Length: 151
Image 1: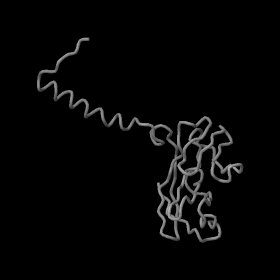
Image 2: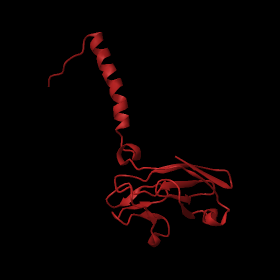
Image 3: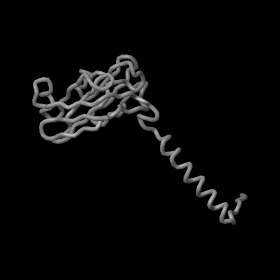
Image 4: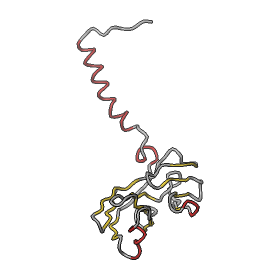
């Protein structure tokens, strides 16, 4: 097998520069919801878990869907101090709102249009047409009473 030996300093510098310039392109081409799935999202929210509309969040495993974001935001309490919040727009068809599947007790969101199912702790697809795209996840912060949800 023939290999070209790089002898000159300028050739080594040129290759290093090329590798350096190619690195951002490789990083931004990774499979992420923003770059591949491009799921729209909206503003976040601030919710007091002790208000009647959100009292399901007072318990670990409890969940609610609020009318914020693009098609709604699904919020679930995963531990005493941690919450997750996912955009309800289906990554496969952004105009369809995902809903909690009653067969799974709120642990799975389903799409009525494409049949995709998503688990609600990490937002990963379980099956369906959108299986390559996880749900858009909002950031959350909890102070003991209020869950702050933000893009």
